[in-house]
Image (cartoon, rainbow, N blue to C red; front, side, top):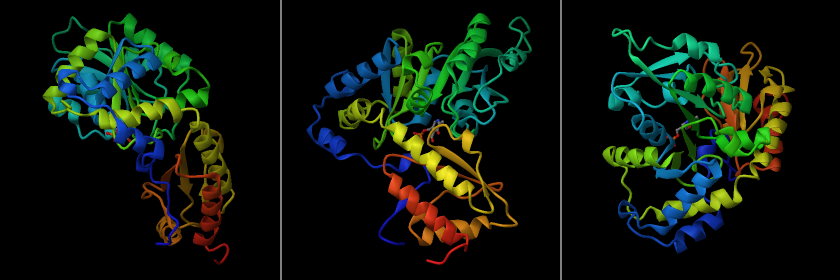
Length: 350
Ligand SMILES: Cc1ncc(COP(=O)(O)O)c(C=O)c1O
């Protein structure tokens, strides 16, 4: 692999910035299980304020945030309505079922949005003793499998309104909620206003080495703190992680617009190449879904051609492949990838 490596597999591959590394080195620390880590307390308070919620909790990962987030507002046998492409449904190892006795009810999504009629259609009859209890609706924003779609305030609000009217609570898997807020140009607080609980990841586009936040009202977060302990997530001097999170909230949000512009530039360039198709208008944030016309472009050869040129991409599946930009992919890197893509397709020679 050449010296220059450009990693487009995910925004989780980012390594901490110099400012984060300094902040981690200098972080004030204490035992967070006693509530005595000043850096964790500060990050949790900053996060709650940003999201317009009463309280917040630091967890180790987005998966743990969603799991604890669900456990703290359901009982075994309850049903949770989720998008059929959602991370909770597809990529969290069945944790809700295994650890919470929760049954997931998948409904269709269009560019991440759930049709309120599908929520209504999924509701169980609370008086019917044969039915599980519908307890929670989970939304995802941005919607990872739906190509990083930023789901609008209106689409989030209408589902929340139906859920609340029918006595359900609402959770947002906002692993990339700041990407959504930046792309939609709305305050993140407004975007999550209808939710009772919301998670976001520090370890994706925000560039931290690890960590996620769960936010909600104070009683709920107290309950979540207990569940976090039960799943082994009681943290001690976690300020070492929180310090990077504080830098992320202060310095890494507004710049996400660059990642989105780079994703658009990359999508436009790749879409011009024979055998590759991208719905460029659908690239709203930092995720690109590339489709292969396999008669003209062999996915395997394309991936290995890029890899020889120092570009890491995810494995193609079902004739498509995800590419993700982040703060360690510059505009120059995008231009380099576009040249390398032409070479990998055999259109020009290196
Ligand atoms: C939408 C979404 N939710 C949750 C997660 C889980 O985050 P983690 O990998 O930190 O567990 C991811 C990870 O990629 C994600 O894309």
